[in-house]
Image (cartoon, rainbow, N blue to C red; front, top):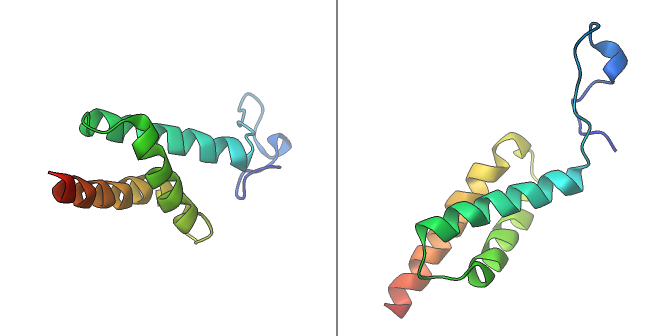
Length: 90
């Protein structure tokens, strides 16, 4: 499945290429990148604790028309939840 807005390779002038990726792979990459960032920012939490928070926030945003900003919105929402959790625990 091509991502919306990715024209077929024939639509590009010769010499230009486009990358065809499934949405599922993009989703996994985005989640992994956000988990990586937050694991670095919050070393007191394990990746296993961060991952479900990120997945939950991502899934809440994924169906909305914000695809271009999904990574940053997911990161911000997950950060907010992690900070709340750490305040309660600390």
